[in-house]
Image (cartoon, rainbow, N blue to C red; front, side, top):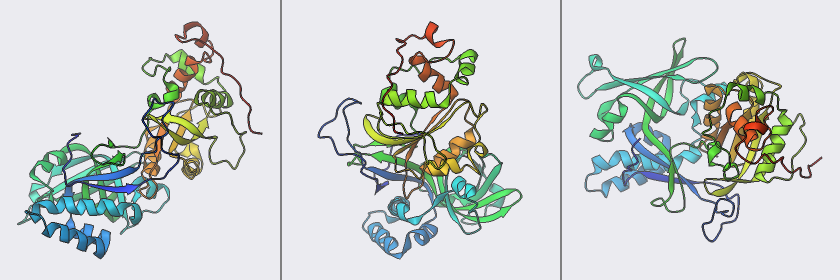
Length: 391
C-alpha cells in the first residue's frame, strides 16, 4: 500500500488519556507519553449523496462551503466529503460487519464497515450512459462462511489513479448499506471505499500512521529479549501444551513487571489487567485473556464462549490494548473477530494475538519450556521472580 497521502485527506480526533504525558521522548521503559489518535480516510470511491445522508445536514453544509472555496470544487469534492465522513465516524455508530454478524444484528438497511481484501471486476456488460459498474466480492473470515457482494459506479471514483487500487484483489475499507440478505450471502451498496488509517500524535503531519490496530508480540518492550524469528520445532509446540495456564500468566506478568496478579474466578472480564506494558515506544494499559492446555486444540470463536462472549467481555475492559493468548493455533476467524471489535469507531483499541508458537518462544526465553528450554535456550535460563499476588 502506498504511503503517499493526499493533502486533502482527513483526520478525525478520538482517543482517551490513560497516562500522564512525558516531557520528552525516552527509551521503551521510560517513555509514558500518551499519543492522541486520529482517523484518516483516503478515498478511492465516494458516493456523495449517500455520504451526505450519513453525515447529516450541518456537516454537509460545511463540506459544500469548503468545496465552493476550492479552485476546482469537483476534483476536491471526494476528499472533502471523506474528511467530513471521518470527522463523523466516532459518533455515527457504524459497526464492523463481522461484529454485527456476531451480535446477530445484520439486517437490510443497516450501515456497516468492513476492512479486508476484496476482489474487484469490471462489469462492462451492464454499462449504460454515465454508468460503468465494478462488481466486488469477498469471503469473510468467520467460523461459518459469510459471503459479501456488491457493485459501484466507477464514474464516482475519487481520481483516475484510484482505478488501479480497485482492480483485482485489494485490501480496502468500505462503508455501505446492506441491501439484501439471502442464501448466497450479503449484498452491500457502498458509500465509501478507500483506506482507513490511524495516526498517532498531536500533529497529523508528523504523527505515526498505522493502517491497522494490531500490535505484534515483537513490539512489546518487555519481550525485547525474546527471539520471535526463531523457528519453533514440533517438539516445542508439543511442550507448550504441558505448561499450565497459571504459569504462563505468571511468567508474562513477571516479564511485564506486574506485581498484582488476580486469582481466576468465573465472573472475570480478563485474566490480567495491567498498565505496565510498553508497546511502540510508550506505556499503555492492557487486558489479557489466557487460554491454556485445558483446551489443547486450535482456537475458534465457538471455543470462546457462546458465541465468542469471552472476546466481548475482554473488550469491555477499560484498556488500550486487548490481548488473547492461547497454547495452540489461533484460527483466522478469531483474529478477524478481535479486529472487528478493535475497530469500534466509538472506542477504537489495539489488539494482540499470542499463539502457541509465540508462547513457546516467550517460555523458552525464561528457561520454562519443558524438556527443551534448559538445554537449548540461547538466553540465560533464569526462573522468574515470584511476586506478591492479589488474593
